[in-house]
Length: 88
Image (cartoon, rainbow, N blue to C red):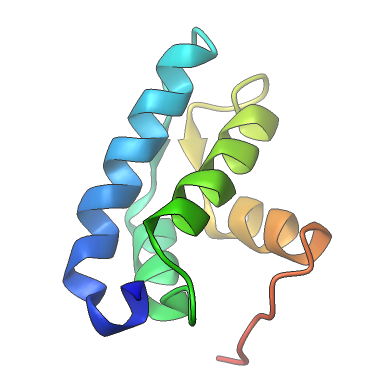
């Protein structure tokens, strides 16, 4: 699981964000704070596929309105997706 390999999350998140943005004809990147949020969240019990699918949804939503994905975007999508968020 990704939670056991937090060092992989940042690399994979950047990759998936780029792939999904290109598929939408957009340029998107994750803010440093958003990357830190993803690493901290760790996708407990999840794997790369869950991270990929999560970022696909976030990218689909954000591509029309911004070029930088922020923590608020991740939190909003996570809440709507009913991902179990940990308290900070």
